[in-house]
Amino acid sequence: MNPKASITYLILIIIPLFLGCRGPIKEENIDNAGASTFSSEPGANEEYSIDTKKSVVTWKGSMLIGSDTNTGYVSISEGELIIKNGQLIDGTAEIDMNTIADKRHKSDNELVEHLKSSDFFDVQKFPTSTITAIKVTSINGENKNVTGNLTIKGITNPVSFPAKIEVKDGIVQMNGKLVIDRTKWNVRYKSGKFFDLLPDQTMSDSIEFTVNIIAKN
Image (cartoon, rainbow, N blue to C red; front, side):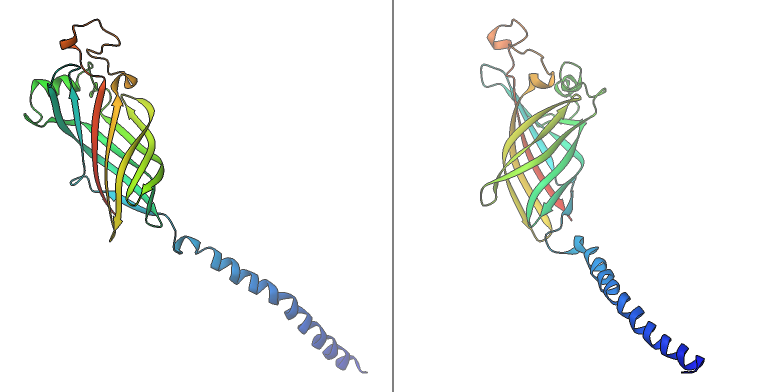
C-alpha cells in the first residue's frame, strides 16, 4: 500500500470513532437543557401581590368588665402570598401602624393618639408590624389553619389562627380571625397582670384582629 492510500485509510477509521464518541455527549447536553426549564412546569410556586387598597386589618379591644369596646382599622402597606397547586404555602403582610384608625372617630382623636403612644404600640419607634405565614394546613375545603409569626414593637411570637382561603381566576381571598394576648408584645397598659387596678379600670389583655386580604398575581 502506498503512503497516500495509508493516510486515507487511517482517516476513514478515525472519523467514525470520533463521531461515535461525541454522540452521547450531545444527547446528555439536550437532557440538561430541558432540566433548566423545570420552574415553568405545573406545580411551580406562584407569587401573588397583596392589593393594599382592598385589604385591611380590623382590631377590637375592650375593658375586662362591661361592654365598653373599641373597634378600628389598620392598613396593610405591602405583602405577598405564595401559592402552589392552588394552595397557600407561605406569605407575608406588612402593616403600617401609622394608619391606625378608630371606627367611630377615624384617625384624628385622643384614642388613636393614645394607641400610637408608648403606652400601647409606640408607633414612632415601631412604625410597622408584620405577620408571616410559615405553615398552612387544611381543615376542610377552603377552611385552613394558618401557623406563623407576628411581630409587634420589634417582638416576634408564634401565632395560629383559622382562615378561609380561596384561590380562583388569579385572585386569592383570605379571611381570618386572630386573638392575641397583647402583653406578650409588651403592650401592658392597664393590664391586670402588671398593675393593681379596680376591675372596671382594667383592660382586657386580648386583642382581636380580623384579617381580610385580597392578592393578585
